[in-house]
Length: 491
Image 1 (cartoon, rainbow, N blue to C red):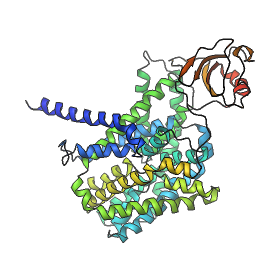
Image 2 (image 1 turned 90 degrees about the vertical axis):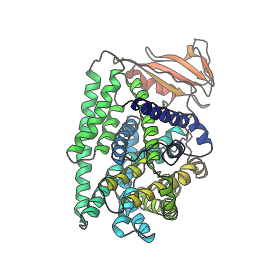
Image 3 (image 1 turned 180 degrees about the horizontal axis):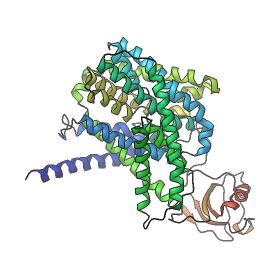
Image 4 (image 1 turned 60 degrees about the horizontal axis):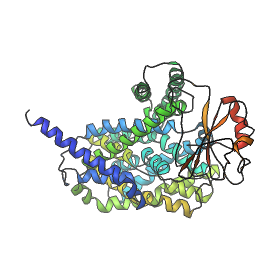
């Protein structure tokens, strides 16, 4: 027992060093085209039992549980930041990709895995594990890289990544059970998938509306308690449907989406806290997965892992996506891009721990190949996202984000809001002084962000093209303000 405090201190020191290095070098990694997720995984491997850190870690059960918690937090944050207007625009193609797209990718990858020497049951299990895109990887690349995609493409990618985990989970569990029991698969798996997704969707929407009411009316004594309450709602939105044999991942995403699109108490504070929690979950999850991987075992599957990773990036994903998007009249560049940026991350690795925990024969070999495929996928599509976006002409003409942001944070429901606008040269108010603006009612200019300067708004201040202008107004005045300044920015 006397050595326990020292062992704990050593472990926390090692983890602290690894997490700090990940955070400090994340920006430099992005400049060199290295996805942040891959950096976290590689540093975890460096700190593992076969690396310089020497941290012994082989607990697949803990990895599965902690990975599930991390995915719940990441999906909840993604849902909070998904506008309902975007959902209406991209829900149909995203739903097809999240169901038929996952099935198609699993089938193609299963055939390819059999070609690389896997028995059919192991081959299709591997295909199911790598069939879905990863919400953490997609959200971090699209929101953290400064890329402004054309709306339809970006919405489809984000919605697909938030909706397609349930089908991959259902396929993985069913194929694992078939591998352990030796029984053949039947068509009942599709009915089970439909039932689980329907249950998750109904409970997610119901919990989302209930959470809206709760967060609008409950009064807590401190602002820091509101994130505690929303975390409780996130875990409830996952746990309750899962206990009822529904899709918890789908439920938590839909619940968060409804909460994020409502005027609730402490809203801006909640968004910042959940963004930080999601990043912490990503860092911890990828580091843990890196610690779990053994470089010596990964090297043994180099050729099959590399080959299947290339098949996934260049054949399976693009082919299936192109077929799924045909009815929705996507341009060939858009279909190609959605197929290319189907990033894999922690989800396949976490799913690969399930057959290991079930003691399925050959499960460790599948895990090692899946890990290699994820690394290949992070390097090839992941490192080229910016270049491909520009090459295919899919960069949106959306205005650049401001260098400083102004927000209202309150535990009360205020009768007013701060709305950001970007002034382009064609704006009706560009070149006008604030005193000459026909602002309605109590609306007023609160702050002007001009490059790296904060400009105090006064009557004689002239609004310039390129300014980011924050307007305070009441909800009933917003439509008139938008007639002057145009569509508000999405921060």
